[in-house]
Image 1: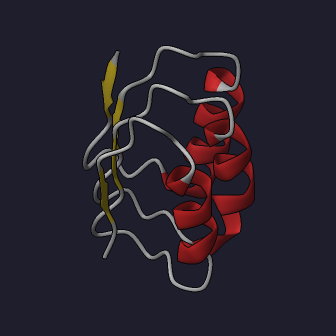
Image 2: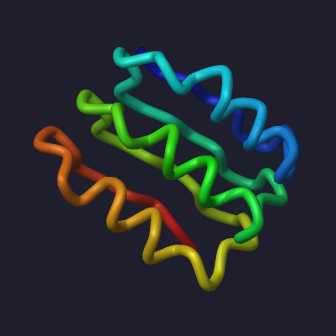
Length: 89
């Protein structure tokens, strides 16, 4: 499954809502959230959602405002067997 919400300016509230809605989804393989005004405040909920995403291969978070919690994201994806690419600037 691929989910692309690029340039929708969902912000932190949108990311938290998405994280809650997707928490039980186990089929997600690609998630693109480029340019959405996301910053460090929503990353904890997002990483919790990533925990059971065993099929996740690609995560695109470029052009957001994630600074200090980028390491949390990297830790969340590094243990995934199929993971290939993290886009984060």
